[in-house]
Image 1 (tube, rainbow, N blue to C red):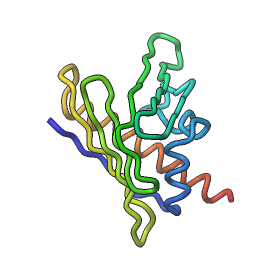
Image 2 (cartoon, helix red, strand yellow):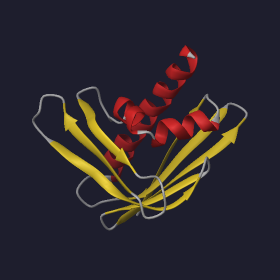
Image 3 (tube, rainbow, N blue to C red):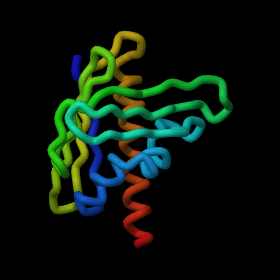
Image 4 (tube, rainbow, N blue to C red):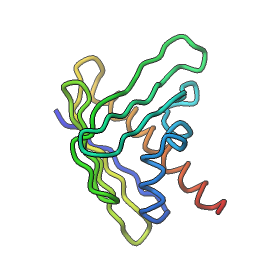
Amino acid sequence: MRIAVETNVAAPVDQVWRAYTTPADIVKWNAASDDWHTTKATVDLRDGGAFSSRMEAKDGSMGFDFAGTYTKIVEHERIEYAFGDRKAEVEFVPGPKGVVVRVVFDSEPTHSVEQQQGGWQAILDSFARYVEAKQNKS
């Protein structure tokens, strides 16, 4: 089953793209809740390049690597990647109020569709807040 989440980011597409693909930015926004964080991120942004984000509970009780391989990159427009036996696509669609970032991904059987959608949406919402706050500082 495929799940979709999206958000609007009130910033230019080049800034949205950069924040989504730069490790120094990823560690600042990539968390579904305040009690989790990303401690390290790596990005080799090219077809066949690898990526990884180390996500951990802030209390140290658990953590995991979200990692995979980029399968298609269209700068400022689209990122496709595989992680395990699952796939995801990220679209960047400029519009009158900024950039719509839409992520469509394969679900997994361990958690409910609602849990998965909620977690990925929370991360995307955190991304939008981060980019907009950064945009307002510059």
